[in-house]
Amino acid sequence: PICPFRKRVKIDSLWIETGEGNRVQCRLYLSGKYAGELLMAGEPVYDSATGVLRLKDVEFDLKTKHLILGTAANWFDRPIRQWLEKKFQFGLSELLQEKRKWMEDQLNSTDLQPLRCKGTLDKLEWQGWENQTKTILIRLGIQGKMQCTADIVGFSL
Image (tube, rainbow, N blue to C red; front, top):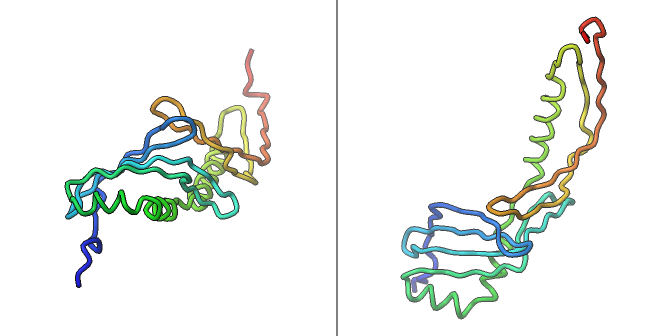
């Protein structure tokens, strides 16, 4: 027997926006046999030990013309929410390391005559995030060492 739910679904686009309180909303536009729209809302949680950002307490609303899938979504609400929480995770540790390297390169390549600065970044840590109207701000903490030298000949008053 062929299971009607073992078809592939293509995500055409993904839209992430601020939600109520500490929640974010994700809107996925789907095409294929189960074409429609999946709206999810959840609270982002970052695990600094694993470098994974995930959504918890996910709620969802599936709008599709596929009658069986729409009905099944209502019947299996809890398992679907658990599956979405498990699957909707983003590994950010590699991206944060990439940005740390970029910032360190920028710090060491800047030559602001008559000042010259060099330094190292020892830490780049996730500090949290903040919902603002149409914007999600991510706060990062950086820690390191910076040394600046000044060419006094270049100063003028």
